[in-house]
Length: 301
Image (cartoon, one colour):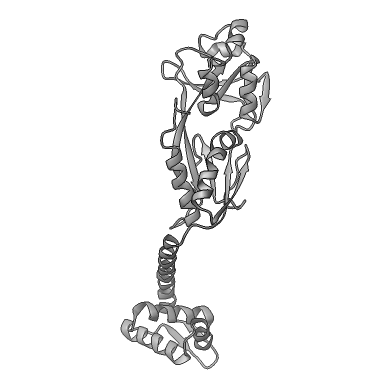
C-alpha cells in the first residue's frame, strides 16, 4: 500500500477519534481505513492504536508516530498547494501599505502598468506614514525604507535612496551655511514627526564617526512633501531622501546643507508575511516592483 495513504489514514483516525468518522472525512470505506492502518502497523511492527468497543486512542508509540506523520502530511499538503499556486494566474485583492511620500511620487505612477498586466488583480493601496503590522492589519505587502526591524517577515530589496540634509540657497544666504555637524545646533531644523526615534538625525561625519543630532525643530510635520516645500521656501534645513528632493536639486531650488558631508544610504524593500510559498499576486507585484525600480537609485530618482 502507499505509505502516505497509510499515514493519512492513521492520522485521520487519531484526529477524528475513530474509524467511522475517519472514513467519512477521507471519503472512503471504513474497511479501507482499517486496512491502511493494519498495513502500517504490520510494516512498522508496532501497535499504534488502542482499540475498544467505545473508542480508539493512540498508544504511546502511536502518539509519537502521529506527531511526525502529521508534519509529513502537512508538508505534503503545502507542496501540493505550492504547485497549484505556481500554475495559477495571479488574481484577487492585493492590500499594499506604503509611506505617503514614496507612494504618491513613485508607486502610484506605475500602478497602471501593473493592473494592465494583471487584470485579475485589484489593488487596495494604503498611504500611511505610520508603521503598520502587516499580518494583524491584513496587508499582503508593505514598501519600507531604511533599516528593517528584526522580525519573521520576508523582505526583497527594490532599490536604494540617499538621505541628506538639504536647504534652499536663500536660507543659507540669510543664516549662513553650517560648516560641520555641531553647527546645526544654531540652525532652524525641519523635522519629520513619525520617526520611531523621534527628532534625531543619524549622520556620518567626514571622519567616519557616527553622530546623532537631537534638536527641537522649527517645524515638525508628519509628511515629507510638506518638509520639502518648507525647505524650498527657505524655512530651514530638512533631512530627506533623494527620491523626494532630486528634481528640486536639479532645478537649483535646493543644495546640500553641509558641503562635503556624505549622504546616508537607505534601502527600499518590499516586505511581506513569512511562508513556505508566496501567493501568486504577491509574487507578481514584487517582481513588477523589482523590474520597475531596476534602474532607480541614488542620483537616479
